[in-house]
Image (cartoon, rainbow, N blue to C red; front, side):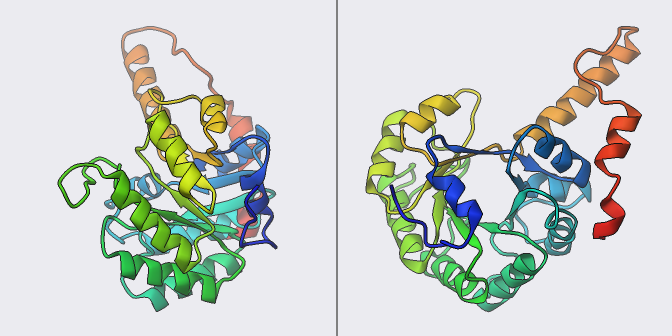
Length: 269
């Protein structure tokens, strides 16, 4: 089993267990506490939901302050926190490193950094800067070669380009790598065989199941914005049902349940 570079980080150990780390992604305190209450030892954040909640675009480096504020709220809770930091909210590696240091200072144990198919050298420099500024932070380096709109140099999705990018990120010090949008079982297995660090994929309802991904050698399975989008869909369904005179279906936590989830938020802001 591969040894983690972030040896003092308990979050790293979850990437080397018998079963993959299933990482739910939260966007607020109550939701994160509810997920932790289901027994999840680690929780990530989702940049789409953080941005949508304040009316800002995702992936545009517009939510640095909101992301840090959420990390401040969640970082001292009884679960391990990994933060989705888009591309680091800056093209300056030193600024990305400083942001990572701030995340570590408020209790985060992991950071997710996406390359947005930009310069490989620049993204590698960001990873190296994060490891220098916050050595204990688990760096999950994401490439977008399989993400919608992401294409290789030949105009098609490229396994060779994916491996080339991930290899550079490994060499820069990444503790794990992330390829959202990759769902083909053979490609996943081939990539696992070529990597020296744990592979993270994004769960897809139409892709392999969690047990199947474990059999393929995947170490971490993120839910990304899936739960947020499901929650929004459930709210819209409930609105339709109420308007049509029907009783809303699905699970509805009580007012008291939600109050209990957020009871200690004042101690962390």
